[in-house]
Length: 367
Image (cartoon, rainbow, N blue to C red; front, top):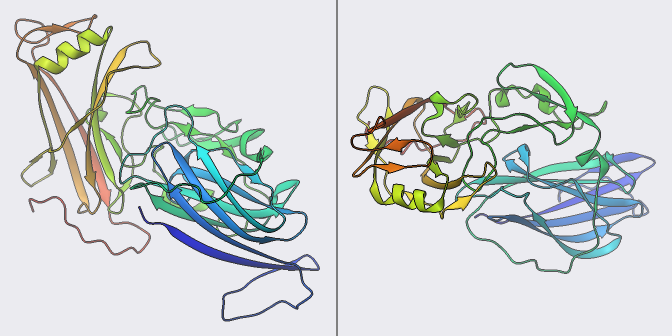
């Protein structure tokens, strides 16, 4: 995990805003000034933010965490108002919603703003900090009583349905599209949430006009090995900077039936860049058996594939066989059953990233 510490200085005079670097000065000595330093750490089930600095009267800090870089995708926290005044040193822990977790190497982002105490939309300044989960810091300071800011959780918002391409109006935070595929840690793959409407005045480029993000799904980089057989499970638009994780799963009526499956199954799963030899997956992680929201017992198999994949068209091939017949409580699988073999695949494309980031394409190993 890379830990980032940043400083922001703001000057407000007669309703005008000046933001300056260390080498410039645009404020008089009498002008109210706010300074903020932050240290952000993305963890497995929470985010930790240390905040220090000075804050002028009638203004506070607003923070919100997201599943993807650039403050995109699933919101991992509400929009939180952190009340500070004068010189301050506070920490804030942002616990993720139930079922949301970050795996080692996965990115998240934090949006930090300074706005009036009563109006988070009156932002003087807003920035985004990305981080990758590796280790987790401990809060350095005490906490203050925070509140959930209204524009982060209530009212109507919009989202683009990735299946139809249409803009949908719904309550902020409402899921307007998802697959029926459960993912590691719980929750459904590729959920799309309605986001707050953009203000009439927008600082910086509008997210809705960011063509680089068109086609990106709710769980960027999380790839279901059998995605082509399930509506809404396609991993969408992927870049060579994305950290990729492949997963597959098994469920049954009882935990004992899942254990029977684990004892007898033989998986053959590989990824191939079309036109090149395939690579078999190594270091597969198997999750504990857990009962999820559909009432069944599940286990997940995941492979962290990292980033730096060469742009091109890829296919994951999935095949499961069993040494002895088993049942999941619904059907039988294995020798002398109607389901001796279960196969699936997922085809997806990786593009050169549109951000101008230089990438060493170390994968796939086979040219």
